[in-house]
Image (cartoon, rainbow, N blue to C red):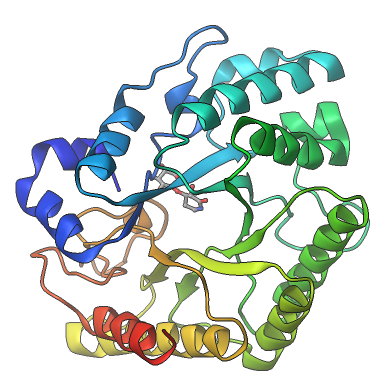
Length: 315
Ligand code: XIL
């Protein structure tokens, strides 16, 4: 969700209250928003979201503490290993402790892997890998656990669910990464499947279920953290499109729930009125994208019913 919309759009605000138990800040808790200069934090927008959650007895998912993206320019000036460790740890202590009362679960690590893991270097390049190598993961996870001993520590990743060699490689690389953390007793409680689905890709049911069985065997929870369906290459007619969007979400959620019912299903936005999808995946026909459970008028779409039905069946 977006703090601006929460402040300015009463019908959207009400729709969140009516439909959600958990909310997440789309950008307001990312480094660039909350920590714009080395010695300056800017909590206003994140605080708006936290206050809204407190008022309405909602939980907030924290997003995110260690990510290659959404970094303010000043982090380019981090010169040494020591400095990187100090800045990462300080940031996490400050942000994670501030929202302890409303955030039971943090995406500590976001998108650690490259898009096409080949075995050689699977970690995505960032200021953190450049200065700390693979150590940035245990540093971030341990700092979060220290700031809030009760919080669930989540490693969040995308492109885990589809058919194709690139996605199978991503599943393998993610398992390998998680195993290496566990072998070193690094605290971690859950794997977040972002689930930015594409209605024109198929879910690799067997591949995904085999992956989840390994996760479950390691006693890790699974969450769906950023569900939406990217519809930019789907046919225009709305009924056809909404049905295709709902179908891929159903295939995905059923495959997940049959192995490990997720501890949360969080969508990346609630209404098509506010979505990141058109920024990156604009439709060529000029029609608006429809990736989310409610349409731009806040009416329920087939995707809403799919999620509702899954929650009932696998509760
Ligand atoms: C996106 C936000 O929705 C946009 O508003 C922002 O401009 C860029 O980031 N995976 C993630 C999210 O983990 O942080 C991204 O959010 C979407 C993809």
